[in-house]
Length: 183
Image 1: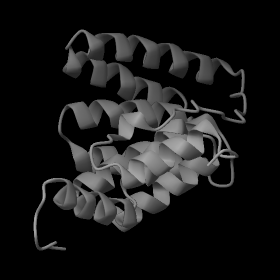
Image 2: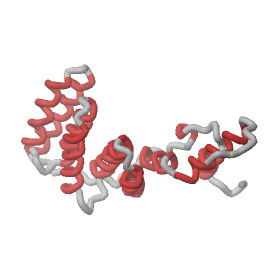
Image 3: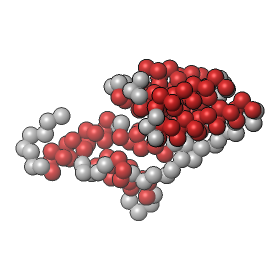
Image 4: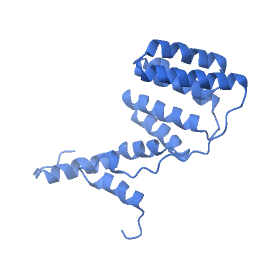
């Protein structure tokens, strides 16, 4: 184990230590090859409206935030980040179908790009898919986001690893001294 990186050790810890949590895995942070947005008036307006909408959402003013985020999408309908921001708000409002529709649209807009917006949409859709019990689809989205540089997605992949879950369950049973291991 002397040639392993700290990240490699953390991943092994998460797989074999039944008491480890996903937070024990080293966070490499995000490493996006971000593509700049066009500097058009429409994109600038959309970005400003999104920032204001996020502030309202953080203040608990969800209806007002939604109005601004709707305007942000209308101002620049090709701006994926606006759909991602509105999807987050929809999730806060427990409107998962609307969130999924916005994320799907944003992913269509960013098809083939390596942008931060695409990675964030993939992560957010992965979270929604997990919530719906579609772990395989979630794992695919997290893998794609991790490839784009998302540290969050990398952690989710480890957490969704079925071998890690099985090892953790068996080791937990052994640590509790159970005579028969139940899988």
